[in-house]
Structure formats: structure tokens, C-alpha cells
Length: 301
Image (cartoon, rainbow, N blue to C red; front, side, top):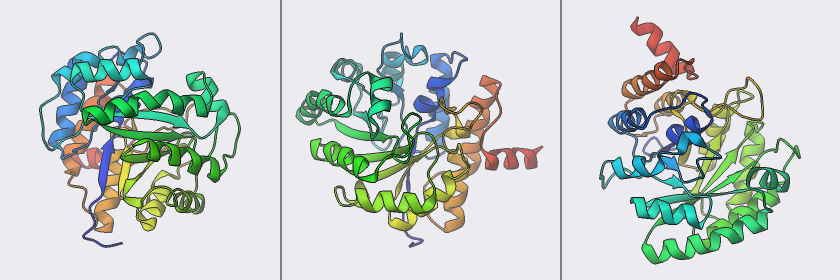
């Protein structure tokens, strides 16, 4: 690992983190959080999701969020678009980058989006075509890459096949998601080596949940393989809906602290990031799931 390497952090707390929170978060609070994250130096922030408010009420204000985002040439604000209708609505609101998601597990795909893996990718074809004609970048998520809540182990070849389809369709980056947080470093390395056969390492990102406490170890393993894009969630926002009481997304603060210790630059100001996480944790009246943030906040008092 070269200390000159830059690591891009994709902040997913505002979307992936908040969507499972029971407490309704007003639009102005979400925007205040986004602005604090920008101030901390994050330049890729997943802003919202254009899903039906019936399914995800927390994201019902998606249009207002996108319309109010600061116009920035340096900060990207991808939004999740599960289908063409969501994509069209996102573009109409002013979104410049979108994300689509597929699963590496048939059972998860059926239960999560009511269709097979093949059908889900076919559903994205018109999105990719339209995005290309409009010059909109598309990020591709693959969930359940290291395990499924219904099927258990997931074969690496299955993940490689889905990643291949998304990359060939036009995704500029493939984010590999350990949805239930069961992955370990050796399996992570094996997975990335497999995916590298179909997508260049510079186009691969990782998205770890910390359910079994392995997220940072897995990120370190991913860094060793050459991955330089990491999804993380401020204050560890976002529970894991499949494991009661378990923690969800890896905390951005913990990732930045580790990167700093490795001499890898992320461009993120840790103190300002801790402030952003503290702001949203206090609003939600919930524990901050970042160990680093807890330690830094305790030292301040």
C-alpha cells in the first residue's frame, strides 16, 4: 500500500443509514447533515432514494432533497433508482448520478424486489440506455456478496456474474455489499480477486456491514487487494434488518481513523466528521455506533 494512495469514501448514511430509522427525519435535518458532511471533506454522498414512499416513507422527500442540494463541481450526489420511473423522477428533480442495485442471491432478490436476479438486471437496461444518452453516471450495487439471510453462503461465481452484467451494462463502479456482515478477510480477498476478472480494481468499491465486527478487517483486506473506494455511514447509521440488535453499516469515522493510521489520504477532516455524526445521533436520540466518535467525544467532555 502506498501512502500516496487516495481512498474515496462514498458516504451512504443519509440514504442507506436513515432509510431504516423509525424516527421521521425532516428534510431540513437531512440537508443540514449533508452540508456538515460536505464541510468535513466528503465528496461523494448518496443523497436519497427514488423509491415509492409507501415502501420507504423516510425517503418520501427525495425530490425536495435533490432540488435543494448545493450545486457543486467537486461533490457527487448519487441517488438510488430501483426502476425507470424512479430514474425519470430523479433526473426531473436534477440528479446527475444514480445507483441501481441487484443481488447475488435469488431468494434475496425475490423477497427484496419481487423478481429474479436476471429480471432485475433486465429492468435496468432502459436505465443504462437513458443514462448513457443523458451523460448520467450509474453506480451498480451487488448485495449479499458474502452471504444471504435466506440462502446462507453465496458462491463467488454468482457475484462475479452479476458484477459482470452490471459493469458491461455501463456501471462506472461496482459496489460489493456484505449485506448481513458475515464476511471475513480471507473470503473478502477471494471475492475481490474473482470480481477483478470482470471489472478493473479501480472500478470496484466495497460496502461492509459490521454485524459480526469484521467490517474494518475486511476493508483492510480490500485495500490490500488494491480497492480504493469504500462505502461507509456516518455514526454507523443503519441497522441490519436481518439481524436483530446487530449493528449495520461500518462507521465512516472508524474508516477514516484507520485510513489516517495507514497513511492513506481520504481528504476527510475527522473532527468535523465526528461533529456531523454527533449531530444526527443526537437528533435521532440514539447511540452513536462509531467507536472512534465515542472515544473522541468522550475526550472532549
